[in-house]
Length: 366
Image (cartoon, rainbow, N blue to C red):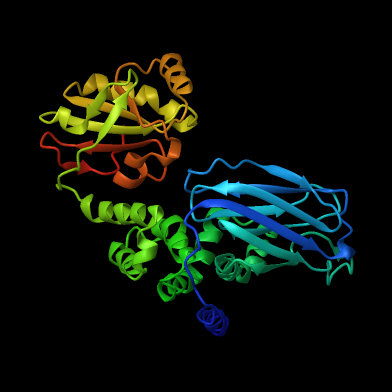
């Protein structure tokens, strides 16, 4: 494992890292396909993994013609994880890459062959990135996971619990992923990895998170996602028991402005929830009992919905009118939940004392 990690580290170090030419804007995917794949007349599909919750891209498809296909769209961020795949029975796998504004060129080589069956493995697993340096960089980062793929498959075949196996495997190459972020301060990919992957895994090591962020170039830090990561890191140091909680402003269900400071002098329970969250709905009776037994505590229910009608309907359907309801209507991209309090899952309750200081960051309602 040590020799393998050393090899990949050298591979990563050898790559030139540059800032995307545009922080957002139109993108253009161009893919040429080897004739041996025989894909003409078939549809290729695109899906997008948008951790930022800022892009409007949905699953889409285009027809392959003359061993070639193209796809256009617009990005509101410097990058988004994109999957290319087909829905044909005899086509295997998908290709995942970091899509950037501008031209993204690829070439799909001849089919690979299974060492077990000897049959051709048709699809986009044998795809080469031609233009898009950050996509190439992310591909190198993503290849780290392939090191553990045989162990992961073995665990699946032996009916091991994935919630136990994967964290163990993940820890084996966490130092390599940290090295990736540290060694590439000029790359948007480094920011992407820090914000969407490493932050959650290193939340108990705020000094290390800050060191990695501080090492990024000023240009990368100035990106919107860079500034958001800075806020999340600031919250890690700020959210300590007994420390003052930063004030925030949000709208209630009638559109009126509500401030956290409006409730100073009373204890406040922040309850993060959403209409689509089943555990949140099941938690409402507990919350009602808590409210009845603790009238001195003001409950501020912060919804992570993005649809006002769904939000209002859930409040009515589940008799949830005994608290103050507020929302940014930004879904899981809510600034207050993700940047202010680093809420990763819901339901989540945070207790603030009468002086506006943090009493408990993860309050358990009994």
